[in-house]
Length: 281
Image 1 (cartoon, rainbow, N blue to C red):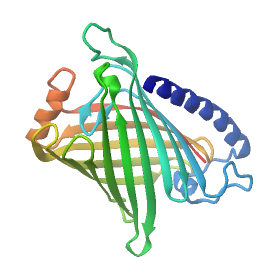
Image 2 (image 1 turned 135 degrees about the vertical axis):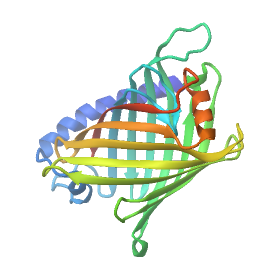
Image 3 (image 1 turned 180 degrees about the vertical axis):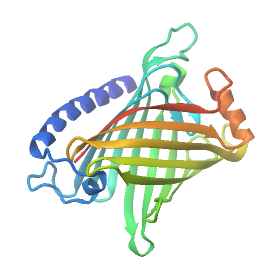
């Protein structure tokens, strides 16, 4: 049932991207800067009802790294993501397709596999006097693909505070609610530089802290990540974003944990990247 659901998400995502991409290009072929796209009014001919938003995002990456942990090796990973929003509420479906998963169950060969499906429900609003957006959310992780026929899942709730200051400081705190006591907090910074009327050069990074008493005993600064990307608008709806990231351990405890969870048992730093195709309307 899970694989049937994931296959349908992938199929619908790619069909929607092709259909809406061609439709939106016909509606408005004039590109705008990413900041303008986020703030400008919709064209007179609207593609969605008032208050309803949609975002289809498909990432093609050289590696899957999650909170510093290596979750793929020597294969192309594809992350389709579909988000539907309405007046502050949003529902996101995200899928991890590993084209050559290199850690299969005993007796099986490496192969393309649907590894993970995440469902995320959020509510976002503003506190204008503080120049702050806050987001409250819940995530369900279905990770059966990493463990063969053994059903595995987890759930988290989280809060994110994003401040409208220089470097856009964003604090996020996650806590598990299914498997035990674990907290993960990150502080992120980002900045965008216009390099032409339409293109922008985007830079950012984060540091994190992990407290995990559910499956292991660790309390330490955990992973850091720096990234850069180039946002190339094709039109006011669709953008292509080449992006590169570098993930690294922030403490000796984190390094030991990340190495132990890596595919060869030795790596704690990872350089990876690829292309993101982003469609918003």
